[in-house]
Image 1 (cartoon, rainbow, N blue to C red):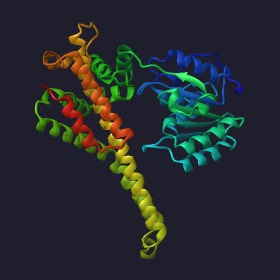
Image 2: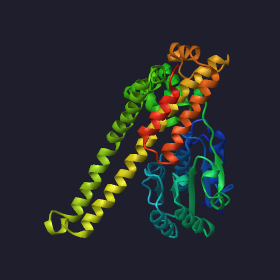
Image 3: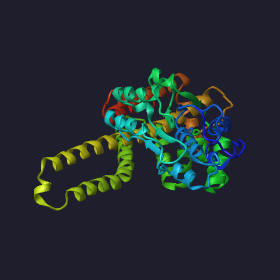
Image 4: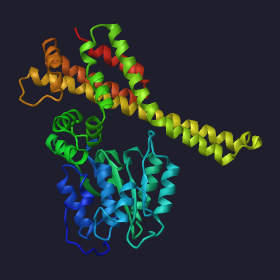
Length: 390
């Protein structure tokens, strides 16, 4: 698949790649492809959470639509990066799966010619959440590509998408950026102090979005301090039950703050569609629309709550990781250096084997909530008991 000609020589340091922290080789590959060297009709971006899969895909979309392959300044770049370009279709989901109907609609759109003279770019942020039938619909579009349509799929690993889809995509593998790379990026892009930047880089474990939130928001830092303090307080059965309930409350409060505005706006849109006529409000279509909206909002809130809980569990894991680091005499730096005294106390009161079992208990709780839809409170109560200190 050939790309439209561009005037500039390849420059992996071009502005459009600026937010790809620690991904120089990825930027080089994408930059060359945007200029016509190794272009493909389908790409699969993989990497651990926070490595920048979506950022890389959107930057590539901008480079493909830019006359200068990613100047970062033109209207094509700015609108593509914002997801508002007429030739960029961005699909993301806040629920457990991408619906089959949504994917079929996207496939139909992909058969159209681009509005401009370059590419039509179809970005799927959560390709690992495709419903089986949705994945099959996508497969057909990738097997029979339109000449000027490019598919950019994002997933944690190649194994998270159908093998038949993965085999038809060119792979782009992102790695977790180092602490120093994240810290330097925060200082340069967010203007935060070096001490705060290094703390955020350590605490986020290379997750760029999480690092930025920790560096720029005291409330986020406060919630993390509350979460990583949980292990030291698990000294009784009552404390374990309270800790589980508090963690669920933290997740629900954060979720409500995020989804409340969108829920209100969506309901207002339906009200505006049907107007103030009482007969219209009593119609079956209106009632069906309200039910569908309520179901969608409930799914979205549950997914968001699970995502927040998952992040909190990731923070708790760092405490046990640090304890094992001290117990084994490793020279690896602590993630929670500011909590060294608490970590040392945990290390004295337990063995490496006990902390490994605690780590396993955290992963078990994650699996119960996500894979087996166990209610979060029940899964967390079981986990907290397993984390209880002797």
